[in-house]
Length: 177
Image (tube, rainbow, N blue to C red; front, side, top):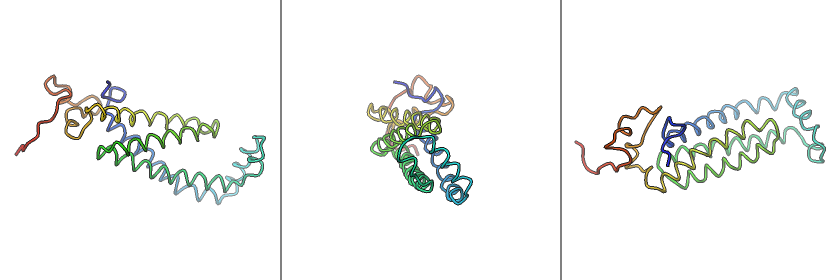
């Protein structure tokens, strides 16, 4: 089983990175979106985008409703990203499962949004991978609090993990004072 994301960092660090990126972007959008919803130009653009669809929902949709749905998704994103960071930090499998599941739902929602959502959907699908791999490594007893110092790696530079005497071994319990 592969221990490293793209051969660079361990999956725990990858979970941290993906969740921090999602958290920062969601927080920035949470502050920007309310201002955009007050600008008539933005509202007109949203209406034009949705007029291309030929269904009753799109024809009768209020752009502020779209903004409200987006704000709800941003709040969910903030909470889910924080949960993912917590799960990786404390090695809580349930938090990682919940985060990966939410990212799967975000992927589907963004795919349903059409062309504008494809890039975001790609990000969510990619973000699920380190969560799933960390869960598998935890299930295999490899990614544990006790063993993490042996497999921890950033940019492939962990000399301890690369040592033939320390690869995937348990860290001895006891006092090092």
